[in-house]
Length: 427
Ligand code: GDP
Image 1 (cartoon, rainbow, N blue to C red):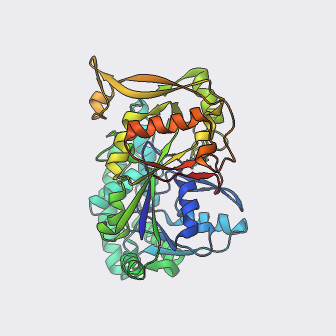
Image 2: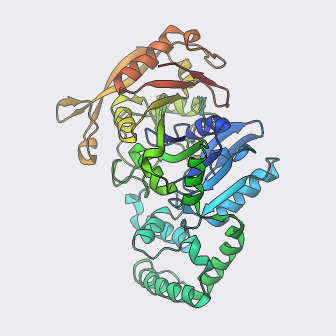
């Protein structure tokens, strides 16, 4: 069976922990979009790890980790990550990289930096990992696919020359930066070839056979619904689709094979980068939630940047779950809220004097003011609780209130960062 683990919100919902946990029953874990711009933090028997490219299943020796064609593959980052986990005692993972994945080039990273510099205060808050220039090139048909590493030198050089010609015009006239040298790009590609060659695989054929053999496959999403380029808060979005539906494309499997869509939803909100964030809080209230949030505070796994904080947003989460095609909600990081006497929840948006529970397009979103409902807190530590009935009444009321608002079943409640900190709920 194929299951997808995806985010309902702005990312950082705890997808890594849920994938790592479900990985126990999985044979194959697939990354299908995004690149090394966001990260998952995972706590397990080997320690605490921040992964950016590897799927969260790499810690099990029974799983195969797959980088699908939809990923922005940064080969040096991937190898650094593999080395990093092996050096800390994790067995060498089984990895397959799609021959149709495209590669993030060093100049993509440079273009990302140059553009953010050029935009100054209007920048997107990019992590400068080259993701937007990478996907722009992919769709402009000037990207490099892994399979091209195995082409003749002549053929590859001809394409490199074409690409450099175009890039160099922008470098010279828009950014006033040094030009690219085709020979250097060729050398870069040959270094990548050496690193990636042992792992290259026809991933869609591999997964097709795995599905036929009844293997358990997990698709692991990066970021969340609201960062999707089509359905998110455009233009403050990422450059590849964050939706489960894209899992079929970014992994190369039939869409009807995705039987379960587990949407991870955090018990409060956080966001990185610019863009409207209706339930955002500020000052000491935000600092305290940030300090206590996640596992060791709400700071970016890739950049270390403090995340923007907010109360749970039912409007955004209802939409985020719907657009993912959610079958199950995993409600995470609930334990963090145990310090609050009262917990505000955003139940509606007031836009131009009218209240709505439907998530609007960006220009209206900018005008939205949160309508808050305050729920009583439970004022205790819920970590270690294993049964839903054993949660304090106010905590269950919080979960059930939110479930009612978003309209999708919360079948898992995560009450700590570890693999076993999970409460299953029959629905
Ligand atoms: P992802 O990108 O969606 O995987 O999310 P991140 O890894 O950026 O953020 C999730 C953070 O919360 C990580 O530090 C996790 O270890 C932590 N985490 C996940 N679930 C829980 C939970 O239920 N409780 C607590 N306290 N931390 C959690």
